[in-house]
Image 1 (tube, each protein chain N blue to C red):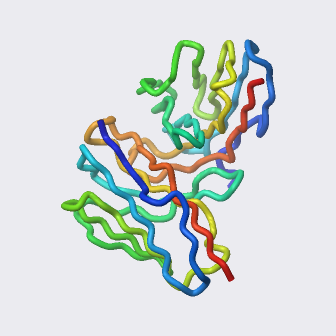
Image 2 (cartoon, rainbow over the protein chains, first blue to last red; image 1 turned 180 degrees about the vertical axis):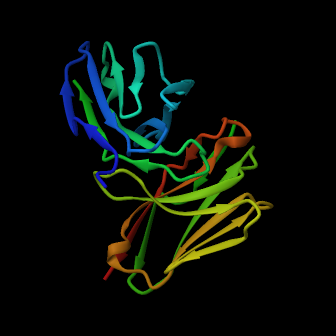
Length: 114
Length: 114
């Protein structure tokens, strides 16, 4: 079992550039979550999908952030334009739609915006 | 809004001793609580889930208690080993207020010295 796959693992970009993070959930899972982790704020939920449909995006910091899930096996989180304060580790997690099941996290993408 | 606190940023103990980590929450009545382990450069990994009607749950050397009156969970690792060194996160089911999302504490970094 490959687990949740995220790419890239590391991203360094300059302020103002567009950044796209990618996630492949575990096959069969129908809920997908995007989190951001920083030392100051810990692990914060940005958005989650059920059956490819965005359910709650209240954690998305601002309009510069957008997320899509075109099919059950792929999701993207895009930041445009990026800012230095977006520097963080971004995690994708997946699980079954019954959210009382545990979440399975990917290895994360470490983003540095200069 | 819901608030979750892990009262120690770091905990240092000697190998063989029992590590006890604390998770407190306010303004909330979660349906369940989870503990995750996170190693450097990796995503969180699920360890244990305890429901509101359960007082204690065990898994090998791990034990979790859940006191809904005190609004507190304790996480114990008995006979600790250096390999137990990691950051441990507690997470609450946001069902009561956040539509079923997980809300994470900032974590406690455990170091077990040989």
